[in-house]
Each structure stands twice: as C-alpha cells, then as structure tokens.
Image 1 (cartoon, rainbow, N blue to C red):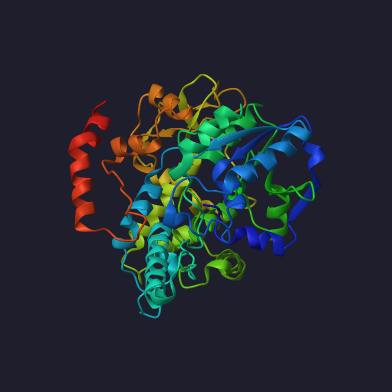
Image 2 (cartoon, helix red, strand yellow; image 1 turned 90 degrees about the vertical axis):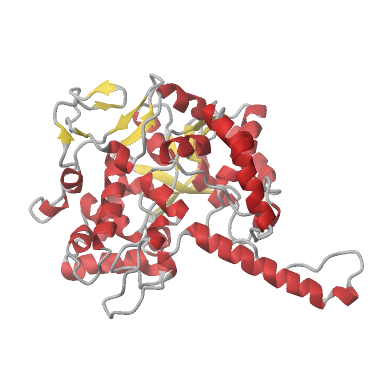
Length: 452
C-alpha cells in the first residue's frame, strides 16, 4: 500500500516528471509487483474477480504487451514480489487494530471514518453488497430469464489494490515459462528493490510512493505510459525542497497518514477524507509544527494513544531495520545511513527507534548490504526486539525457498504469527458447512503442511 493520498498530491503540485522510455534502453529495471499490478488492474478493470477468483483474465494480455515494449528497448525487467507480512500488516490483516480501538474524536463522538477499517473489511463488505444486489436482481428478472444471466449492476471489487497473493503462484509460473527474472522478497518488496539498486543489480526502480521514505533511492519511476512510450518519475530531493520539509518530517507524516509498513491512519487525521489526508497533515506541520509521533504519545483525549504510538513505532522501526535477501543468500537487516534533519534541535524528539528499542544490544555491529558497516557506513546498534516489529526469525534456507516461489509466504506467516488466515468463500457468505470444512482441513492436511 502506497502512502495514502500522496501520489495525487504530487501530481497536483507538478512534482512528477516525465521522460521517454528510450532513456531506459539496456537498463535493468526492478519492478515492485504489487505497484505494477495496481497500475494494470485498475478499479474499473476486473470488477468481477472477487466473485469468480482465479487468475485475472486480462492480466496476461497486459503483460505480453508491456514485455514487448521492454524487449524493443532491451530493458531487462526484474519483478520483485512482496514476501511475508510484518507485525503491523499482520494485525491489520487480522483486523486486530480495529477491534482493539474504540477511540473518539476531539469532539467526543465515535470515529467511524473508513480510515479506521482495514482494506480486508471494506473488500468483504463490498463483495457481500454486490452478491446481495445481484441475487435480488436475478429474482426480480426470473420471469424474463432465457439463457443469459442478468449483468451485475454493482461491482464486486472495492476501491483497493487487488491482493496479488491469490494468484502469485500462477504469475510466477508465467514468468518461468517466459524466462522472466523474478524474486520474492523476505518481507518488503520496495525495500528489497532498494538493496538491489544499492548493490548495482538494477539500474532503476518502478515502485510505490513508499520509496520516498528511503534515503538511498534518489529517483524512482512511479508510472509507465506505454502508449506514449514515456515514464513518470519522482525526484526525492525535489519533493522535499518543494514541500519545504526535512526527511524526518516527511517520514513522520507518512507514518501518520498510513503507508505500507503502518497501514492505519492515526489521530488526529482519521476524521479527514482519505484523498486529502496527506495535504491536511502537511498543513498541520506548517501551521503548528505538528509532530504526529508526539501527538500519539501525549494525547489525553484518546485512551488508545499508547496503541497508536506502538503502531507508529513498529512502522518506523521496520523502515529502519527491514530484513532483505542479500547477495550472500542470507537474510540480513538493511540499515540505511543516518539522516540528519535540517534542524536537529527542532526534531530532537523524533528519535523514535531509540525510544522504542530502549533494550538495545549495544555490542551488536551492523552489516549493511552484505558489507561491513565500517566501510563508510555509520554503525547503528541493532535492537534486540526486532521480532516485535518484524516477526519471529526463520532459518535463511526458508527464505531462499520463498525467494524462488517454492513455498508461499502464508505458511511462514502461520509459523511466525500462530494464525492461519482463511478467507471467506467467494459467494460472500460463510455457511456452517463451510466452517465445518475448514475445521476438518486443519486436521486432514493443514497440520501436516506445517509439520512438514
């Protein structure tokens, strides 16, 4: 999930540049699969996918068309999938964040903004609404029914990115059959791409706005306009200069509005429209020098403030200490250089990871990008509670199996979190017979799968 409402804001401010695709000739282009597919499978396409499941019918056609352009300009695409979920993402997927939060607005009313509900809840709600509408439509037109069912009037798909995990295995098979290079990241796909770029395995990144939170990505491609044979890109330095904020202030806003590593919009931004939430947060910074982490830590109006502060801390810490698959085949923490704000005294209270990781292993040295941290990289202590904001660590060999698509991340997530997420059936309901089937599947094969 990209930083909420930021992309539209960048286009409105004229901060998205364009360049001919020819400039990428002979380049190795790292592609974030989630972001790429969100461009292909837009909200108006594949609206019935949530009703029928399977591989998107139009995706193969779009892929073949794009791959022809890449071949024409001798561009080598390297597709990187998202791997296992980190702590915040797992909680959001399970709906634990919403269940544990019953906060109120400053006016004392219950906060019922869609920002408080997870994408999964909204998706299921829309799917149920579409099925109900279509079934009623079928009954009302039963007398005139001949050989073709009535066309659904309500889309089954909600205004969210399609979950690529459902057809990831089919997509990997397509890449293998066509000789396309791919990789499944241990966790974050866009941070894995940053590592590949930093080590010269790729020349450019095609990814989400989350890349702006990484100091080692100076520019990245945000969109490809294949009919016009040009691409859209974002320059991080230009964005920060135009917004007149430091890198730390930008990350603070991103963690408050919601992003891939911290998907929930935090107070006091929950009451504002999702499409304007980044702009509102930026205005707050200009108007009152707002510090959103400080707000979570010292908001007496909300009894859930400690929970929101923890969400912020986990997201921020995951950004600073995200595991990646290195060139040695091992999964190690990808630690960026220390970044100082334009006014260190102004932002002195933003040293969040130090506060969260007050029990730090001081003797631990940091290995960055497969190299020793003494080679021009500032040494940063590794917190001894990484498992709290990422997940329990698994053997390196497990992540290698995942990187080639041999084993799905869902199984690893079950081992590390103790939760096996089973989606409701595509027909929108969860009958007693279906629940009984799920219970039987646990003893018949799920336990054996985990044991194996």
